[in-house]
Image (cartoon, one colour):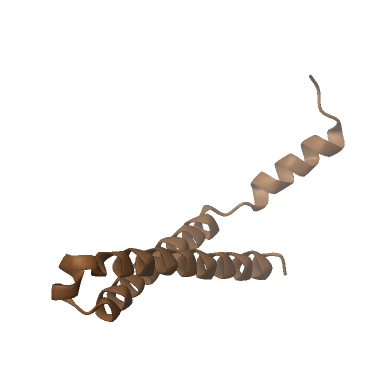
Length: 91
């Protein structure tokens, strides 16, 4: 299967302009926001459930819900930072 010269040129141009540091920064933003969101969500869920005594009874579900919500917020913030980095790169 042979590609046209135009397609080969587009692919080679993409790899010439590709900077691995951009992808590393995006991954670090995703990871950092995910850890931050999970930690804050878990803490908020734990504290709103009533602390240790309530956690041992039925409070664990609040911690679990807080962890999930925190993870979703962290991923959302990671996506926003991804869009910012890509947008700055295209200028």
